Image 1 (cartoon, helix red, strand yellow):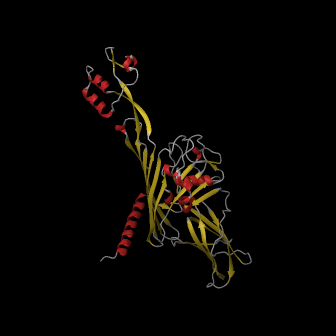
Image 2 (cartoon, rainbow, N blue to C red):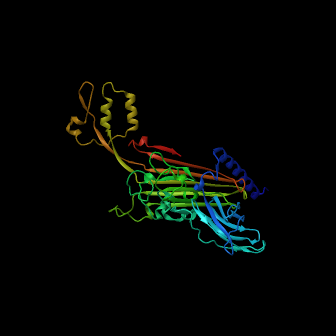
Image 3 (cartoon, rainbow, N blue to C red):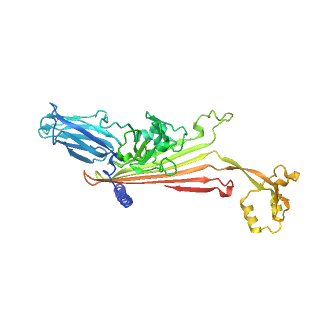
Length: 444
């Protein structure tokens, strides 16, 4: 009997390698290519017990989720800096000749953030290690940048992010960020009193702005977001697109452990209190949103090659839109068919797609000529028509897929690929005739 576990591992490895090859074909993004748009920085000073700097000390940063280790040496001034570390949690170890190594665990590296962690080395043997099990809160003391970051737990659990603009709604929790208030064009909040048209939306530094009106083009589902950051001021050169808020989203990556999630977000009229605007109604108008999805990620090769995938289906059904269309009654169709020179084929097609009005509108029984049909010879013939009220369907189905793959070439080079697909199918009821209620497909 075949080994199911071994077959599963081989399948995942082959599928991951194939998927990563696809990422290579689509495009590779060097980790250092976009400054802090996909990562964060860590800097600090290394001194001894007397306060003197320790030059040429070795500093290692270990990503606890992927096992990837990066090393740097302190300068002659005792300073070190890790640029463009992938976001995550790190254990940092500093060591120097004649000093006991010191380790600080659990340092968070946030998107678009410069963390600071200083070390004081004690004279001792190499075999002795001074370990700090919990890192203090890291504060960006290197820039005057106003930034707020929201990690994957907040993006998945805070109710604010579960509807509307998704994780972008989390920016409203930041001081200086407010609702756009419907003033001017654009989507998203107002940052620093500016209009939403001044905002800039990126996915790991890649332009994600709709060119028709300011707003995000593709949507990254909440459960595929590793971290979301909004910057309000003092932008660096890579944020030169707009003067408003800078909204940057990072996609999740795989780790050394396999992780998968099934989720559902349910929002409908039965769960909400009746809105005070709907006076006289016993329930809210229809608004049913059921967002279903799954995520799965893990290693293809531990400490080396990783993958992550997410797929989401989000149908939204709303109250039917009502409208009216004017159409001939049975007597009206008969009058049209009796017209001299009528094109029988065109009449048949018109009858095929146009409903028959049950009763004529008021005025035809009075011989009103303003509701007649003028013939080429100048005579007027009465064509009884009536108004048909039509309740048009009102629904939209969203399909969203997100995939990322990471390859650790060495402690100096990492490759990252990502693929995001958004499909949107909604009903087009602009024609006001049921025969023409067709699906409008939109793809990003």
